[in-house]
Structures are given as C-alpha cells and as structure tokens.
Image 1 (cartoon, rainbow, N blue to C red):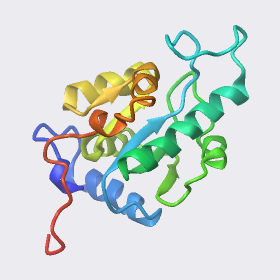
Image 2 (image 1 turned 135 degrees about the vertical axis):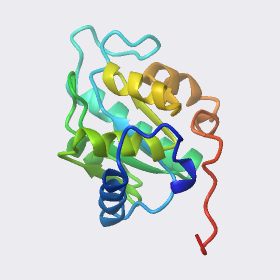
Image 3 (image 1 turned 90 degrees about the horizontal axis):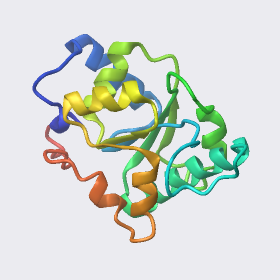
Image 4 (image 1 turned 180 degrees about the vertical axis):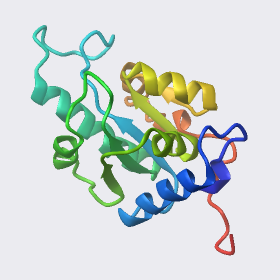
Length: 171
C-alpha cells in the first residue's frame, strides 16, 4: 500500500500509521478501493424511482462492492460520507463476497486523508471526498462513472493507479 503514497501528503506519518493500523485490524493488507456510500439521486445513468428507494440504493452500493472484488481483485473499504450518506454497515450486509471488504467508522480527517492517499480510487457523490482525492491525485469517480464501466467489465481500468502495484514481501 505504501507504494501508492503521493508526495504532497496532507497528513503526518503518525496519521498514516494510524490509518494503516486500522486497515490491518480489519484484514485489509493490499490495494483497496474506498467507497463512501451516498444517495444516488441526481446521478445520470442510474435508474432509481423518483422518490429514491433507500433499499435499492443500498443494494446498488453492495453490488458495486461485489463487482469491484470480482473484476479487480482489490479489497473494498466502506466509510461514512459527510452528507447524503447511507449506512456502510447496511451496504456490507448486502455484499456477497465479504472477504476483504471492511467498514471503517469514526475516522479522523487526517486518517481519511491517509486512506485517500493509499487507496486505488474513491467512489462517492460526496463533494468533499472527491475534491480531496483530486487534489491528492487519487483516481476518483462518481457512481454514474462506475455504472458505465460495469457492463464492459472495465472497473479494473478505473482503479489502475500508477505506482500501486503490490510491494515485494521484503518491503
């Protein structure tokens, strides 16, 4: 994971260590995609009823987690979004491939920044997370962009970040 650390780190070494420790505690040891489940209203190409069916949105995020695991072999880390959020625990309940899928709660802002630095990509509607990811140079996508990659099975291309290859065991 440390191969993905970008140069302009907004977090300290202690914050990075804290984020890595939390990842290891939940069993994430390799590349991962950060999902911050949010409401999908207003997202183009995502067919939801006008009233925004909460259960259907949770299912969409769960299925995205499954597809990321299947198509990319990356782990998935679910976190709370700042607003328009869906409960990450509910999303996790709907995930079929639960191995290497984890929920991190109560992240400090610095820990969240550390996660954004070392993840292969982030997918959310949360503007704050998307802007921070862009500033850090982390691949970032809104749900409609992930939706477009699903049928052609190109999710792996979305989350293929340079310098994010697996480190040798000696590292």
